[in-house]
Length: 335
Ligand code: PBG
Image 1 (cartoon, rainbow, N blue to C red):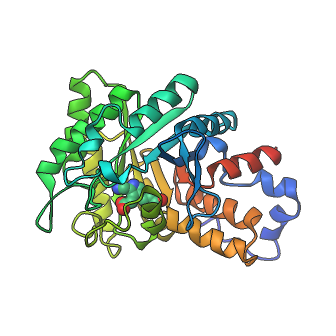
Image 2: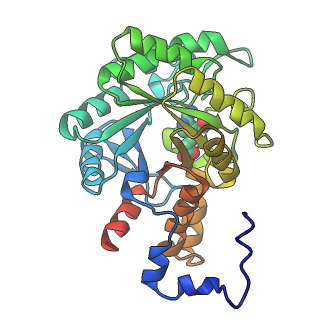
């Protein structure tokens, strides 16, 4: 605060700027737009399939044909990017997550279908092996250890397979050291200089991912936990080191995850680096809000936009949220 700003009542009345809707709109410091939203969706095999996810009321796994229609709707609402996650058939999961490298796997077919039928929306894919491994981990396992450098080799291949399929944004969520640099180099070498990387830079070992793991079918498979590669929720400086390294390795955009419990990290990252910074309002955050909404304890019209506005206020340039379509619709109505 500078010295000329020591305002005093009654000369200054902060309520004056709140006296009416137009006055509040005029002085609003942040605004939530459909273009801030990234919509994660879960895909499954089959046609005309809509499979509800118990822990995420209102969210379903969709077969590719249905997903394409929903993505058209998202595009029409002004949502710029969708993030795809596969629920891989259990028989296709193995120790090495080999299905991740199948150029005709579920995710590649979904990307091709969406890019063919809805070319003007961005498509993002996770790089991590957890939807493909029989142990539910994001990398390769030897004994109880998740191997870093060995995993990089596979993750780089996975990223290339997704880029070949037409994915616009590669989003490594695996938290192996050195993955951004390895993926960037491989993409460039293969002629994919224009494929962007959104790094899950500060990804914490969080209990809030529970419903997601149900959605992709990895929760019952997961051996142990992910604390040797995902970040300790106690740490904040370390998040800045993760972001610094990912940027040095070529990340175009960085992400903090989960969202609401980590808004301090979002704010620190944005203040420190001033780069495109995203936050993921993860499955457990969605479930938490929906559980209270379903009981009538919280008003969705209020808490959903409020929760998303808090990300903007913290400095996020955009938010991954399962509420994206619903929110984009209500933003449209309020225009
Ligand atoms: C996979 C991945 C996870 C999420 C996104 N990518 C789960 C995990 O790391 O276990 C979580 C998203 C959510 O909870 O909504 N690496």
